[in-house]
Amino acid sequence: MNVATLQLKQARDEFVAQWGALGTQWGINRTMAQIHALLMTAPQPLSTDDVMEELEISRGNAHTNTKELVAWGLVRMVVRKGERREFFEAEKDVWKIFTTVARERKRREIDPALAVLRKCAENSQEIQTPEGRAFFDQMRQLEEFVEFASNMSDRIANMKHGFAVQMAAKLLG
Amino acid sequence: MNVATLQLKQARDEFVAQWGALGTQWGINRTMAQIHALLMTAPQPLSTDDVMEELEISRGNAHTNTKELVAWGLVRMVVRKGERREFFEAEKDVWKIFTTVARERKRREIDPALAVLRKCAENSQEIQTPEGRAFFDQMRQLEEFVEFASNMSDRIANMKHGFAVQMAAKLLG
DNA sequence: CATCGGTTTCAATGTTTACTGAAAACTCGA
DNA sequence: TCGAGTTTTCAGTAAACATTGAAACCGATG
Image 1: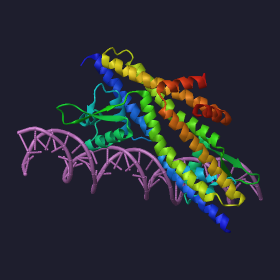
Image 2 (image 1 turned 60 degrees about the vertical axis):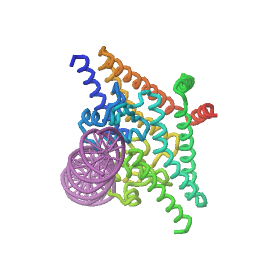
Image 3 (image 1 turned 45 degrees about the vertical axis):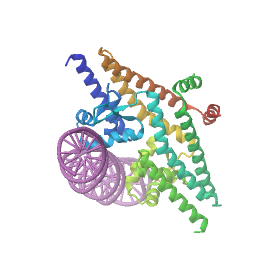
Image 4 (image 1 turned 60 degrees about the horizontal axis):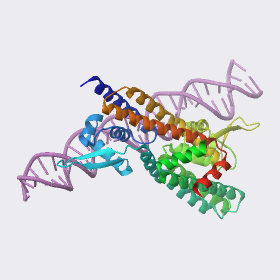
């Protein structure tokens, strides 16, 4: 193996390791983040065995987390003619990655919060003491804000990349 | 205790419990989220003992997580004349809560990612194989995007509430 | 400077989450 | 229908994370 290939391998391993560590902070499990990093920087789709070997992890682990990435929509399964094994490739377009993650996080983080706040606002609506009113108002304010965030998130996640950039430029210029 | 007060207590307990559960999903520990919920809906500042009693948790736990909330900037310590104990009160303004959380998350999630991507881009810059180039390009695209997100985050977190709403209305209208 | 009211730290323990490895189930060609 | 190749599941184990409770600490007061 020549020196450039070796250098690349090293750079890529570094990226995979660091991205994995980062994933932990983002509340995503290390392996899932590592597989994502690996596939994002893979020239061709990889099989489960490739992933196992590269990351030195068990089959079960590789399988579970690859499927989880597919469920998120960050990774696609591909089949090759004449091959029975499944291969996986990651979405590489950063804007698509972003919108996918944004949608998923909204679904998992914002929507449940909204449900809770609505419930709590409703439960406290008719309490007529001053403290009851204060509590209800707090719930309503939180609810309104989260609703607003939810809408923003939807709109942005559905924008085309070019449009988003243009808009941002106008806003921030 | 009259019926309204009882109802309120119930509604509040519900909120604290649910917010705690939500916190878990957000990657924040349950107790910290519960204390936050408790303080956000407290008419007056609470002492560590109040928190311990309300949530039925140990002193150490209450202490650690309260201080963590102070470190995030979501909770303030207040001292009362003639009282030696420390009391705590939460920021209740939703926009302030949002900007605080946004800043903190940027610091913890975006900045480290940016550092990693810059490093990886640099490390792969001079690799001249086609694969090396592809890797470098991928790193650069990720880097650029995260940088962009970082800027957006900064700007928004520094906006006044009214301005943000106005802007959003224009965007989404 | 001893005591009191309180805060802070931390080793031990409990709880949750991730990972392994092997068995079961599935798939397809012969 | 069998069996080789492959995917999927899952009970058991390991690692990470949260919590307790008690001791150390701190500063104000008599």
